Structures are given as C-alpha cells and as structure tokens.
Image (cartoon, rainbow, N blue to C red):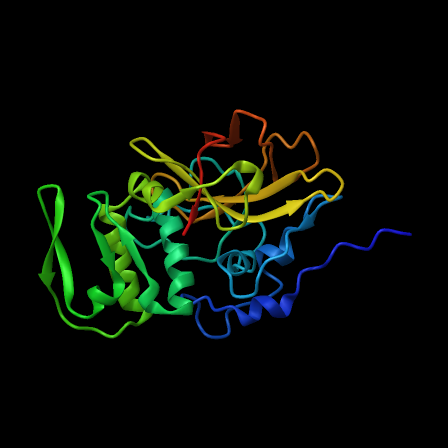
Length: 275
C-alpha cells in the first residue's frame, strides 16, 4: 500500500486563532509559520489540539520573505544570516523585549486571546504578578529584593494595558525567573510551545515554534524562534549548518549532550514547558 501523503497546513485553522496585536484584517493565513515553512522531506508535523498554545504558535503571522531583523531602535541586527523568517510581532521602542521577554510576550498574547485573567508571570524576585490584579488597581514597586503592592489606576483589560503590564514584567523578569516557571521535559518529548532555556546572567531562551516527526524513526525536528540582546524582532532561526537537508528545522537528538543553535548552545536537559 502506498504511504499516505503528509497533511498540509489547514489555512483556515490559523484564521480561527486570535493574534491580538494585529490590526483588523492584517492576518494573512498564507503568511504564517505553517504555510511558509514546510517540514523536511519525510517528516510530518505533530498533531496538536485546536486552541492549544502549540497550535496557536504554528499559525503565527510572518513578515514577508527576505525581511531583515531589526533592533528595537530600528537599526539592523548585526547578524542577518541566522534567521529564516521574521515574526509579524512588534518589539517595542525600548531595550526590553529580549530573549526570555519575547517568550513571555508570546505566552501572554496567547493567554490574553483565551482569557486575560490567565496572564501572570514571576519576577526574578519570585513575586507572582497577575495581570488581573494589575489592571484592577494593584501594581507593584521594587523594594530591596522583593516587589511590594502599590496602588495604581483601575483600567480595563485591553491590549494596550497588557503591553504596559508586560513592559513592567520585562524590566524585572528574565531567563532565571522564566526557567523557574517551567516544568523540565526530556528532549525526546519536545512539543511546540516548549522552551530551551539557560537561566542566569548570561542566559538565553529559545522557543520551540513547531515540531515535525519522521514516522519511520521517531526522530523529531523543531522550528526554533528567538529574540536576543539588544531587544530585537523575534525571528525563526535558520539551521546554518543544514548538513541533513533540514532547512530551518533543527534535529533534536535526545542522545546528544547539546542542542546547538546559531547563537547559543544548550544542554539537552535545558528544555522546559509551561504548566
């Protein structure tokens, strides 16, 4: 019996997702991760539940092919050889949305699209700052090594208010706090939405946007996305070695000691997942 053809991306599925930062009518289902970046030959995208974080990431909007990566100040990133595509996601005008912050941003945008009251993140101090408390009139101020409640204006949970909340989170959170929010996962079980992360200073975080599997062997390849320092547009990483015809995909070998990306090398134990 001939093998069945691998499934093609469901363009309508992307349209059912919500990307709150985009202006009305801007979403183009043919300019997404799923539509533009096909799995390597012999691989198939893993199945995902509609409405899941991984499914939402799979249909993220991309800027046109050939778009360079820009920094928060509009300057070009020094290296323009490490990206396969640029996400259609604003980076802000301050040096805030760096590596861990970009992961936090996408997780927050997903949760906001589902239920704004789900959004919460820990600061490096360990304090858990909930968006619901923040827009309801309880902000925070940093005193020593902890965050103390501070009154602020009551606001509605709009996207503009979310962005102001996130700028405060970006200021006081980072790879260390994000790594402590994640559940460690074995590399063999990698799924879209997982994070390769080294907590600390310096540290780095790379988001797993999508995963494809080779049915005959069970091998898994991943699409990875990052921001970096200084704050810059989040971009899909290019497999600059590409010795096995993977294109933008990275083979994640659970037997290998490390996972190499163009600008950082992680240990295989440094994979985490949001609860």
